[in-house]
Image 1 (cartoon, one colour):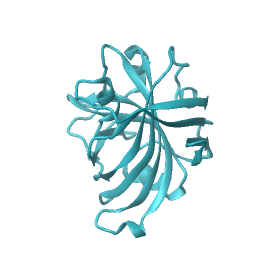
Image 2 (tube, one colour; image 1 turned 90 degrees about the vertical axis):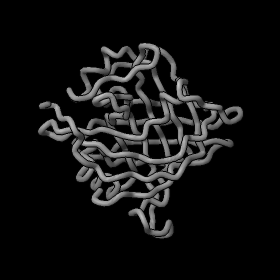
Image 3 (cartoon, helix red, strand yellow; image 1 turned 120 degrees about the vertical axis):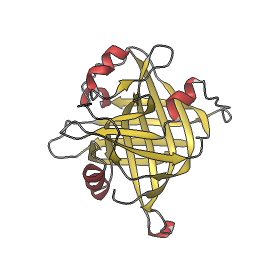
Image 4 (tube, one colour; image 1 turned 90 degrees about the horizontal axis):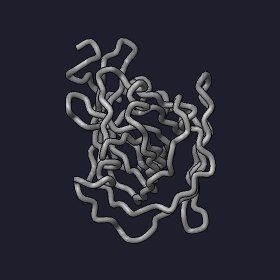
Length: 235
C-alpha cells in the first residue's frame, strides 16, 4: 500500500510442516535463501482474522476486517530473515487488489470464514479468484495449555517471530515490507486439518510428517510501505 497500515491480527493458527530444504529452494526467487532450523525447512499455513485494517493514524472505527489464510516459508535475503508468501487467500476483493498492486504479493480472493465452534475456532477457505489454481483449506483449532515462554533460540520463535516479508516482481526485483508488532503470545494448538490443498495449489507434494501447531489470541501490528530491497535477482 502507499501508506503504512495499522491492524490487529486475532485468533491466529500457525500450522508448520518440516520439509527438506532442497524441496523448497526451487520455488523461491534467486535472491532468497531457504532458512532452516536444525537443518530443516518449514512450510507454514496461517489462519487469522485481520481486524480494524486502516491507514496508520486513523481510528479503529474506520477500519474493516479481513479473514485470511496464507502459506509461506522462512527465508533470508542478504542474511536478513523474513518470510516468502506462496499464496495469501483473503475474504475481501479490496483486500486482494491493493496488496497485489502495492505489495506485489500473490493475494487471491476467496471465501474465508473464521467461526467459533465447540470452544475453539473453525476456519474454512475456498478460493474464488478467476484463473487461479483451486484451493480449499478447512481446520478446527483452539489453544491448549498455558502461555509458552518462547526463547529466541527455540523452534517456536523461528516459526512465528518473523517481522519482514519479501516478494518479487516480474522483472525479478525483490521488494520487502516490515510487519511490526510485539512478540506473539503463544500457546500450543489443538488443530485438526480436515482438508488441505495448500500444498497442491502451490506446487508441493504432500508433507512427509505431521505438523507442529501454535495458537495466539493476537497482537496489534503495523505494516510498512513495500519498497525495493537493496539486492535484486540481477545482483
